[in-house]
Length: 543
Image 1 (cartoon, rainbow, N blue to C red):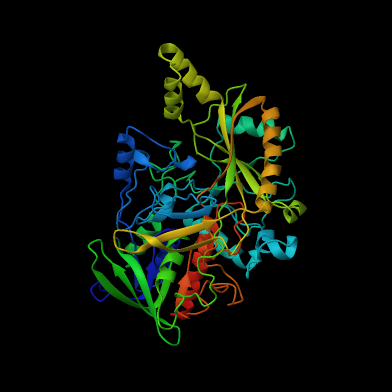
Image 2 (image 1 turned 120 degrees about the vertical axis):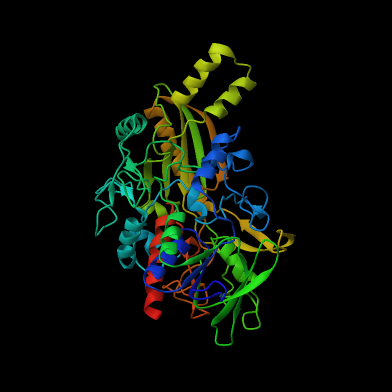
């Protein structure tokens, strides 16, 4: 394919996990593929060195993204969410942290890769809440297995992921590609102590290699999954971008797509992108895929107002941007009597789920995870402020590191059309494009879930002989956005159909977590990957 012609069989907007997966599958099938990425290409060694050299290292896991703690670039023409890029319209601030670079946000994700439960595809018909998906778990199971193989998922076969302590769920046609990593002292000790109280420890499926896998080395326990795995043992979207390129796909970084054009039959005819200098160019294709992140995808569609689509592309239903969800949560920090020694191995692995049961008629499902981090710099700064110095400073740092546990709870959030992404009318980026404007709120269903979770955390405190030193109930977003181009069978209340193809445009697909019909309390990345492989298969059949 000639980049001068700027035409391809398939043009993909966004080079994150969904764009990379689709591009790789289609390129391997011999199709001409062009992937446009708003941000720059980054190199692992440079990111690691930037982070290593930074005098201040802030924790991505705690959503503190400002300052030198983030090694990733945020370009004026393609800002990431480190500063004040997003416009917040409340009443709940929607903190999120996505990257606009080749490979996308999985560069700094925690690597949790969960399947949804069968019941999570039929929330409304089962519990009278939210929406049902137009597809079932059984329809997606094959693609979950394929996605786990593509991403190299490490997991534990046979455990009950619902957290109820019953039969293994969900049903799997194939085992995990890799067996679980060795468990650290903290994980083993917590599992033992909390199991004695009737809780069911679950080892999180994740994207870190426990054996050499697709040129990835075995996880060395650097405990630096956020913000970047220094050795590439953890999966990230750049890996499938590399595969796509090796099979002939062309990736164009620093290409900010700002407009799509359609004809009177609804077919997308072209898109336009801007370079950092403001110059623009047109791209044509047979099929277009928008995989630009849950916030950026509706922004692009809403900017693309045409004679045939006056409300924006794919927006005859007025649902583009609506139903913004996340796994908004709370956290509790406690000090245990016995040392637990967090900070070795994966940053997350042990969770306690409450995902299914009749309680979901009245309260949100949730998972409780322990953050396996040792923020020594944070503890040191706190102690220095208190005037602690010398050998006492060393003793207190060690004590805090060994005995402090940070628990985080992730809750499902129901789809609500009033929670949405729109275009700012006051704020623009360096290219003159409107920034995303967010409205987000939480309902009684979410608050009822927090009450149940706090009961569990209070039990944890007793079982661990610990004391709570901090509780944060202030709506901590977990960087798992979904829902803004929601999937459904009815074109009146959804944006894409069961194949993730736009109701309004026969040659436009939307990929990523934005199509999810319900959020679940679990990380959405694997579901997005499975849907992306399904999209690639569908496009191949058409081409």
